Image (cartoon, rainbow, N blue to C red; front, side, top):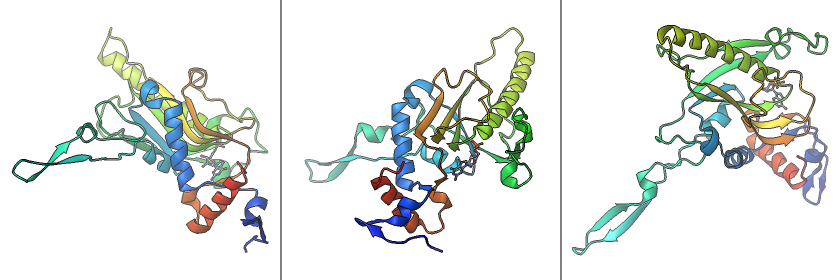
Length: 266
Ligand code: 5GP
């Protein structure tokens, strides 16, 4: 049933009364673009592996390293009146609008699946002991897969991507589990390369939205936030966000998003 009850100055009341905040694809795209520039992610952190937490992190992770593939040709008329196409500098290097690697290779994306037990209906967070370990609150539904590559995480600047940091439980669990994998790789490396330095591996977090609220968990890697490796495209109040990939009617969803934007609902 629609909760649309009227219009005020061409703004429909349903958007104003809705406690949910509707996020459009345009907003997602623009947020990512602005955040990559603002945090200088290409210049400073230089990620070479993304780990997208499914399903909300998949679309943002795909947009982050988008290839624009701009092919700019200058068309020249030759003396013999034939046309030739001259490459411009833009064409010589494939353009990427957001994240890029110096060698112009795509940044690989690994997908992991994590679900809160409460979302699966088997864990009541409100009843739970606040000191409960993260592992009792999150379940792995999918994990990394690198085939036969040895130590695929070691030495990498890893960017963990999710759509929203709400209670921080999911991110904390992802980092806890990734740190465990990285430590296992370190041990393997030390055994196979005795005496040599272990390549440094860094973890960073990218989220579209960070809800300004008391978090249930802290990030297990204590250096991420103070070292500036926590990239939130936008800080938002603690409201339910509806992402465009969750929409049933994308036109209505986008319309609601536009109306809320006009009203500065977020
Ligand atoms: P956490 O509480 O662990 O930070 O967030 C767990 C997951 O809950 C997120 O990855 C996301 O999938 C989901 N979630 C939390 N808040 C919201 C929200 O406002 N909107 C949507 N669509 N999902 C949310």
